Image (cartoon, rainbow, N blue to C red; front, side, top):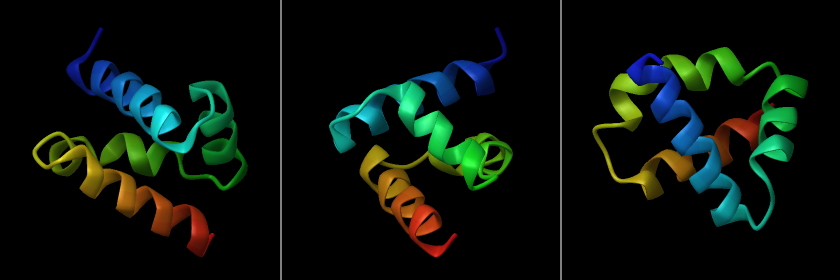
Length: 65
């Protein structure tokens, strides 16, 4: 498995815990708002910073769409 996919899976699981839901529900939200590819492509940024920063960014993305 590619490092990007491993991190994306980890990020989805951690974000789901942060939001009190499941990774499947988070992924469904991303799919609905057409954000999956964008968040996946943010590997370089998200894996280099605190997860909380990625969570804040994801919250903004979901809110703006």
